[in-house]
Image: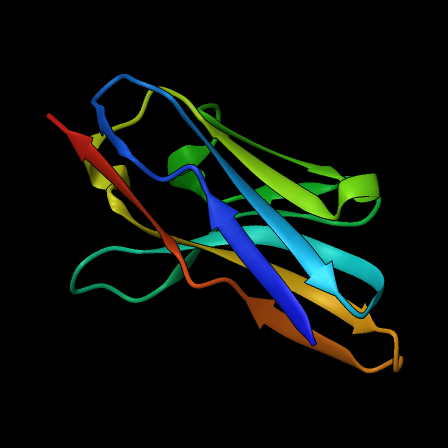
Length: 120
């Protein structure tokens, strides 16, 4: 079994910053990509940022220059530093990981989500 546990969601004023963390645990052989998706009320879940094993990153256009994704491979953890937050960033943020388990099966895993609310 593999679990992803997020933390760091909170209520923050526009212009503020938050740092999300997501730790993967369980029977892990290797972690390929890790990332963050978000879902705002009434909208579909969409990619925020993704980081590959070789640290190549990909961001959705609306967060470029404001958010930074990073990972600590030794801790199986991915971070999302969110700066200059806007009310439209309000959403439930989900951690994602593409993991090869100790049984060598490669699967997508999701966290339960952490709520980020940005007030105007």
